[in-house]
Structures are given as C-alpha cells and as structure tokens.
Image (cartoon, rainbow, N blue to C red; front, side, top):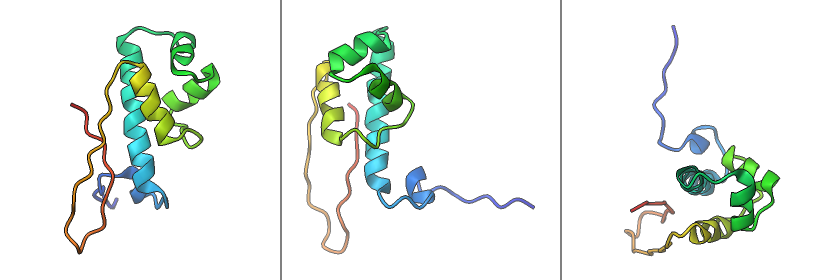
Amino acid sequence: MKTIERSSGNVYADLGDAKADEMLVKARLAYKISEIIKHRHLTQTEAALLLGLTQPKLSGLLRGQFRGISETKMLDCLNRLGRDVKIVIQKRSRTQAGQTSVVFA
C-alpha cells in the first residue's frame, strides 16, 4: 500500500532543503519572469539581452536552475520587464519567526 504525504506547500521544505524559504521565493520569481517573457513572445536571446543575463544563464533560470542568481538580480529582471516591485515589511507575533513570500498583484 502506498503512503501519501500531504505537502507543506513548499516542495523544497518537503525535500529537506536548508534554504527552502529562499528557494521557494526564487522559484516564484523565476515563474513570473518566465510568464512575462512568454507573454511578450521574446526569444531567450532577446530576453537575455534585455535582462542583462547571458542566454545560458537565462535558460537555466527558466528551467529552475537559479541557485547562482540572487533574489536581487531576479527583482532587477522584473523591473527590466516593466514590473514594479514593492517590498512590504510587517510585524509578526513575538512567538513566530518572520517569513518571506512573493505576492503578485
């Protein structure tokens, strides 16, 4: 009999990645970058030039290989794609550690 385990909502945490929260944020940013590139019908070469990345680096990012790309660079890519990025910092209860999440408007 197979056992089914409910996800925590973060596949990286489920797999035991020490940087699970950071990886989930990067995955969501990479998804949005990919979505915009597709919507604008840009080739990888065109998009890489616009984003200030090499085409191989962009190709890796679009395939989920973004460990070598900082969150700051990914936010810059979104700006270059014509998106405003807002960072909101809010207080949590004293008993809980804060968390970082990505919300698209």
